[in-house]
Image (cartoon, helix red, strand yellow):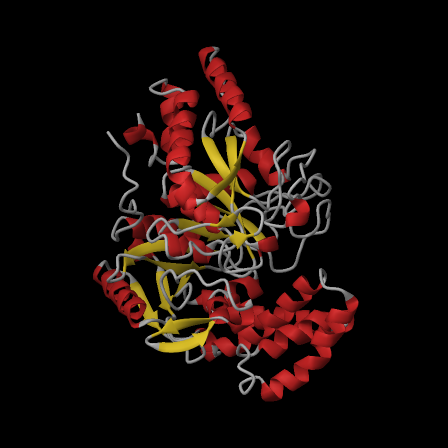
Length: 495
């Protein structure tokens, strides 16, 4: 049973349940058994409700026997990131002050997944309030990467990506403001999709605080899976307006026009002096360009509109500061704002992250300043989107390296990564993901190979606004010519 279920896609499991070749309860027990076995060392699934999941699985099987079908995920077990509120389960977002928070209502995203027939048996680990590039907190501890327990699976959807790679769930739903879907997918070698901003409801997501009704700037929800086809399935189920505007609005994403890889026009943007990538990633991306061209794909190499990454990253940091600043006390916001000018002048001497003064200024800026910055963003987006008059897809790195070793101290701004033997600031992990986040564009993180240590390498596939189906379709077609998802050593199902 484990061989046929543990690494099957959500679509495959749903089909098997419909055909009665397996039961929902059998599928659930497979994932529960794997979590019980691998969980203590991996620590990806950190809160469970086996009893409720088993009851729902039995109900799903009884419904099948009556000839009923709840939806395309009928009886399929899954886990979900511990930032989403699920009725009756704790939703901590990694925060000690929320370790007893049990929502009385499902997040809209959760409700849609359940309505489609999914069975949520557990929550997956995140950093404190989902604000780190690694997944660890004082409530549940540290999550390890299935490819190397000494390394992080990333953050903030690190538990989600690790659970997928380890065969503890066939699908997941995460969130992304600083690469929190795309980076864990890259570190763990799975698929992840950052949606066009605004097409998936963020209500019932922490942060903001529980009960928040307004939709956040920059942040989005999005699916993770082991196949691009499952990404599309989950997107189809969750992309919809909030209930209070649903009577007058609908979301209808355009279908992908391209049928084969050779139908795409591609721009490859893999180099910028602000954030050089490790030579093994550069080699993999060069090989990807060669492979695409050999398959008849039109690929140009260059920078969209000749604008450097700095232009996007500065603005992203400013608006990220405003988004995060809402949770900072007034005195702290003022201190960061007024300190930004000092850091702008002395940041390098103080060993501060590059361009971090933009973040500090954003934390304390006035609403008028935010409005002006937002207008600059809209103008930059309009210019950038002209790129898609000539290209269907822009390929980019996700982050500069493969999965990094655990590094929980010192504080985030003062950590570092090693790129080609050079010590560089930890926050450079947010540079390449900043473009799609700032401009609200869809971006799919897809596995294409591995480095000399066997660690996964993903590519970021970015598209025009609302062309989510095109980036996912490109990832699907690409997976047929690359390694795609691989099972980490030691996690193979036992026959």
